[in-house]
Image (cartoon, rainbow over all chains, first blue to last red):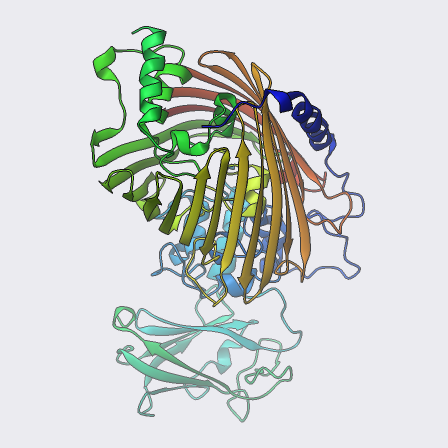
Length: 270
Length: 361
């Protein structure tokens, strides 16, 4: 049990009172010379991609109140330097069967469930605040539906953003709008783990999603390993609607095949 | 039951404990008690002790319903105790340039279980959150007290010790440290409850309650010197992650001047993972005026600097809350919070108001 400290009361009061006065004397900044996120206004104008807009209007001004630094909740840092890498195709901590951002699928993206308030675990985000404005939620959903592309897109280059095996088909998302007339089985080559060709029944750019190509194998995608090649060179090289050939090897210059391997689990093979 | 009997009962309850609430530091400061007096968790928050439950019925509430036989202690048996919290809110928020919003909300519903398999020695403690969302474990740890409850070791999932464990997880000082009632972590904690001292040291994953992703660990310590009318303490943390280190220090204290209790905390964080190194500061000053038994008026003023190297980006938050505890285990809280930040950011200039019904035991 704490002891009596009468002798110290006056002294402690004199010490604490100035401290409290000091604490309440601090005021809010006037924001001079800063952008809406409290950072010095950049000399170069920011990019205008969907993700950049989400970063500038949601993640940085609202979410980073907590989701920042080494102690960010669930290790999810939403500052500009880290948000994309920690969101897209990263499994959620609270519901590991869901990705935080599942490109092409907003309803199966945990971040959408959290901001809509229908997540299985925990409270709606931002915690302790009103729901995000509907236009911000719609923006995030739209960004994910469009493939969850990063903020910076190299000019004049078509590149692959992500490859998603799901529901018996393969979805390839590009940074840029694909020339649909070039989306054919010769441009997209799929082989299984034994290097056997997987026949494609359909290769198409779905309506309303010009940056996406969907590949539908004749017999679906059975569980196992696969390798996908997208031609960025030769007579069947893929290009965007402006004629820019695919930068498949991501060297910053047009040309080069895109090559990736992936596994299909039993749950994703339907 | 007369007040005299209440106090005797309280004293008996206190004496029956050798040093073992919910997170309202002003109550501890008003009473000149440590957190461990009212909470099973020596660092405060969560399940209440027999004394904590008795205090809630005899001292905190304006009026106690029922008779002697209705006294709730939480102890269902010598070996097993239960507790809980439920906060139902009506919230209103006004963000500049946006439509005003309001909603009803269950802020949280939690149940606490404490299995004292060896009374006053070995306990298994569980804090389970049932709302919002599905059931989620917030704390699950085993705690062993040594030598007359002088020191203990605790291992498992727990809230870490840093600063004051305020009920408001959105307080700037709690957001800054990242250590609050929403972010438990897995690790080991040792603690000391000796005379006027209470101290803890913990090692945890340091992944913000998420899965461990690297080899580095977080080290957190807190020490407080508690007297009947004043208290002062300090905290420190270091989180070693692959992305960079995070170092933090803080000081806190309280002073009871009769009907008013003053509380202050100031924290400083240097985080390598933010913009290759950012220094952040936050402070809180709180005054709690016990108007009369069961009635508390709380005024807080908070200040936050998200980047010490950038001028004029600071934020403040001022809150005025009225807490009315008409009967035992039920509290009505009403409050308004004014945020003030840079004019370019609407969110930093919002106003919130809430009405909350808080049931606890």
